[in-house]
Length: 402
Image 1 (cartoon, rainbow, N blue to C red):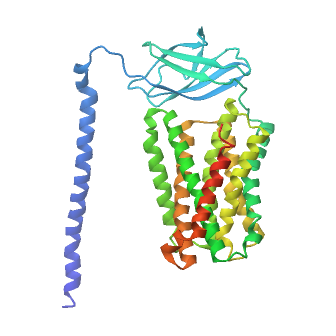
Image 2 (cartoon, one colour):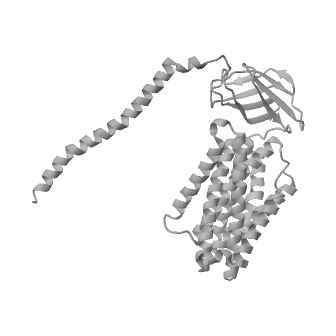
Image 3 (cartoon, rainbow, N blue to C red):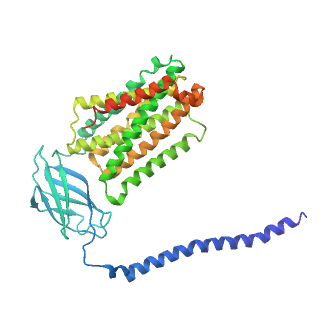
């Protein structure tokens, strides 16, 4: 009996090899069939019989506008069924000569820069109309003409300072309440955790709405609505998997996830602020900056809430404040220098998924720390904290919506 095992193993090797070859064959056959079908479609062109002389479907999306001393530069992306050629460009109803880079027809999904030596007027609105060789027209409006920020140390430093004021500073101020909050009892703890859930729930709804709005402005080929939903779901699932890899996150680990979710949201928010600032669509005055600061102070309290039962070192608070607020600086830089609606929508969707993951974890942490499981969710302190968190974020959001 002992000598039978080696013989069985030796006999099974050819069988396993044949099974592997058979599986590989069934993998190659459908791919080969697909390749033959595509080749026949391209060579035989059976769709030519359906042609009725109608022009191809054309679509053009305006992704970026740069205003400088030598005129206007526009980044356009083609989304038609065939390559499209730009024949003429109008500015305020008058035709202007233009140069295109790269030259020639723009393929589906490709981009091109259009440069017009137009003497734009500071503070004025200008209407641009692009005409293709088929006669199709695509309009773009410059609501307020202002010079586009340049890549110099002064402008980047100013944007960094603004990002710190609207992102890092309010989060740090909110975290300064940590010592005063350490003495709260069970009801106080429930109130603070529910407050965190409330502010995060508002951020989730706000980020999702903004992501879908920006997705509608992007080129159709990006399938903006589906992109937002899939990115948010992927972000949520990946962070849930990472967060529970070593058990349910509590204390400092949970605070890090809260700061990460808020940071991803602030990145998308910074992109929107930077783009609006560059386009002159929003005047970032003192009142608006103060509104952003008030709006974000509660985020620092929410980050501190899971750590009330521990005594983390000071550097931990510094790191959490930078993680939550620092991305606003990066967002401002990218938004003012290289804005595109699809990327802003993508970052906001990722942030929304991260925030949803934190909402789930904080709610679970609240039920565990209270000891009454789901009954803790209907306790007066919990309901009050949830209401205060949502209400505060909603009211302060009125100050920053322009």
